[in-house]
Structure formats: C-alpha cells, structure tokens
Image (cartoon, rainbow, N blue to C red; front, side, top):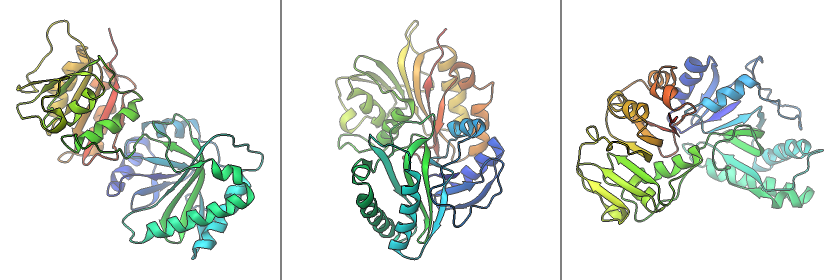
Length: 361
C-alpha cells in the first residue's frame, strides 16, 4: 500500500503504522509512506505486469485502514511506473488501466485522482501533462468511460476500497498507480467570507468524517467559541448555538440570531440539570490532557451531549503517545463513544480532530 498524508507529517504516520499497528514503512517521501503488502517482500516490482488486478485487502489491513489517523488516501496494491517523458508515463499508465478494465463494466461516475507532493517545484505541470495525455488515450479506446471520470475524491470515509483510478507521483519520473483506494475522509473545504476564522474550515471538514452535520433546530454548545468559526458553521445551518468564551465573537458569528454568547470560562461551564445538547464543539488552545480531564471526560460520562467534534492540540506532547491514550480501552472515548473517528484533517495543523456519537444510557 501507498499511504498519503499531509506534507510534513510523514514521520508521525510512519510511527503510527509501526507503534500502533505493528506495520513498518519500507519507504517514505514528502506527503507519502509506503508499506509492504501483507506477507510480501518489501520491494515493489519496477515493471509490474500490466493489467494485474489489485490484490484484495486482508481483514487485518481493512481494520488498520479504518483506524489510521494521519492517513489521507491509501492506494491498495499500487503498481510502480517509471518514465522520463509525459507521453511515456501516460502510455504505461494507460496500458495498466485499460488492461484492468477487461470484463469490468463502468456505468456510473468514477474517481480519477491525480496527486503528488506540492513541495516538488514544477511537479504539478508534469502531473497535468500526463493526466491530459492519458485522458486522450482513454478517449480513443473507451470514450464513454472517459466521460464518466471525475477528479474528486469521494466525500466521507470509505469502509471498503473505492474503485477508480488513483495516481500518485513520488517524483517526476516515478509514479504509483492503483485501481482501488481507501478514503479516510479528509477534504479541502471552501471558505466562507463571513466565517470569523480559518478554524471554520476544520469543523466543516469534520462533518464529512462523521457523516452528519448540525440540523435546523438542533442545539450546540461551543466551548472556547471565540472568534466564532465553529458557532457560525452550526448557526448558518439553523442550529441554536450556545457559545461559551470570555473572548469576543467576530464576523458572521457576531450578533447572529441563532447564537447566544456567554462570556464564561469553558472549563467551568456545565449544562443545567436535565439539559442534553445535540452537539458539543470544543477547539481550545490548551494542553490536551487538561481538555480531556476537565471537559471531555465529564461531558461524555454524564451524557451532556449526543455527538461531538473535538480538537486536541499535540504541539507540545507526543502525538503518537496521545493517540495510544485516546484509543486505549479505558479512555473516555472507548467507554462512552465507541466508534469515535480520529483524524488529522487537511485543515489541521498540530492537532487531532475527534468526531463521534455518545452512547446514551
């Protein structure tokens, strides 16, 4: 498998694979990590047999893929293609792709995803050139299939590999190509001119991982709300938001009719007796264990919310050690919100986003 991640966080993905899943990386580069096939040697053949179908992911790999936090996209059984020219690479990829389509009928739109490290100056032009050349080759052979291609990663988290064409350039002349990939839910979101801060993008992205977003009439408690990006995100969907922060709200959150702002300490706030919020939002610039002890544990254990979006900052702690704690059987999430999804989002920096549903008594 070849696993992509946010550039600069490869070392954490390597550690997550090795320390939490017992799966060592055999190679990594800017924004990607490669692991060997289960039970296979580490080397990927430089010239694989064209048209060889992807091997099925083992149950163990399926479980691992569903739990990976720093992974963005996982290419299943990729072949490696090498070439010095745009046309040469396109021809090799086309040979593999067209051969893999034998006996496969495509009737609906399919993902046609091309990626590579933005850190390699000029690589974007190479990728665009090869993608265009491949498109022309596929049109000549299978015009209907070409018309159904979509340059969009499917929204949400895939429980099983998604079938399409997934192409990742490790360098100008080295490309990994797969017909199947796991989608881990990260996605670049569109900004909103009224959003008070960049953090708005994080909660918008988190909805896709959870597979749900606030609805009109639902209630949200936003702890550490200022300047109001998360509150605004919920309020513009018609939810009623209680924003808790001593700081001011700004932009679209300021004086929004769906937002009640209380200037209180988020760590001291507790709902009135019998009140259960539909959503807990929490994005505090605080040491993560302090947030876990004083907010996450009481809110989840006492059932003060039905679901949550929580960000934990790991800039000053060991991120993998923190993950191990969060995933431990005795953690608040394991005890009160089994199935919690933990992700390092596209819009996250040194932070983890956790989304899930609280088990109700």
